[in-house]
Length: 77
Image (cartoon, rainbow, N blue to C red; front, side, top):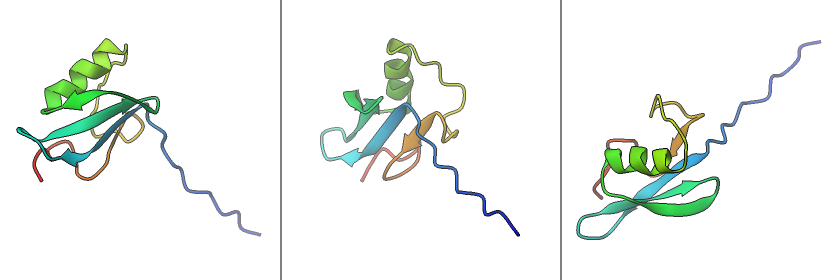
């Protein structure tokens, strides 16, 4: 009998939502499911995370940050 491994689903503490219209465009940041701020650049995500006591070593690690509606380089619609 063969065991089927269940897929691993990451639940990172930081979620960066898709680009919102604005001047300049921005992305909403959630930490632990709560909206904590808006980011207009990658450095804003790091600043908000640090303020919440979270050290981010790798922005591409899905266990650390989930990017919704684009990746860490997507800042315009």
